[in-house]
Image (cartoon, rainbow, N blue to C red):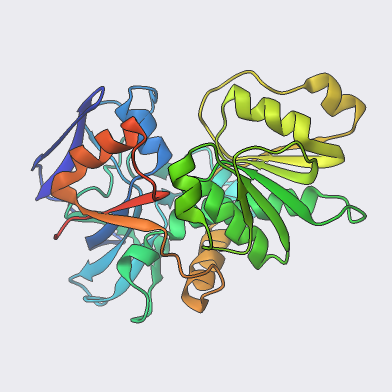
Length: 326
């Protein structure tokens, strides 16, 4: 089969690789759409030791089951494979399973390929009226759905339901849409890239600005650099909550003294639970997360150019979706 393979720092190649082979309890899925995630970019830049070359990246995907009792079924893929038996799994927190695996990290190859093998439990049926490109957004949207859920649960009941999202990439936009779906009617996205701000105008019930000095009860850091954590520490109100999603860099930025003296809650959030993923997929199918038309589709064979353009910051759309069969 053909796949887009990460071969070293800023090197990806579209080439032949061994066919994906499902294990017992798994289905073979023909990939119809796969999104480029920020973590794929971290690997591409050589910043993710969890993703050593050579490796097929990609974990935001949807496609069609090939063979077996569900042959032809349209599905979106929850890429996080948990053991199903540990305390975290049994309590519905599969994202904290100590033995969790995710496609695009060894030992599981990713979805920038014609086929991938996944367990039955990781597949959610996609109705005919939903495109594969939109179904592939279930994964990044679930990341933000999970973060918003945890952030709102931590927010004191007496505080105003108002939120700031730092970053207008896919995770930031998804967080703003999840907040709106949760009934938060006052949401602001801060995005410094002028082209992206222009692209995002009117796609959802939120404001998009280049900077702000206003404070908010809930701040979602969808970037995760020291600078954005500094901004989050400054712009969260006393008694408020910072929900941290981004994995831009490991350290720096938090104003621990202010967070302590002002009783600010910091919530680290990682991926999603299986229930979060199912709820997010259903919200997509129901239209509760908007038109989801803020994507750019390209052929998988041209994936090298897509990574290059993202590296150069010349892509206005928050998400590039690669189509292996284009």
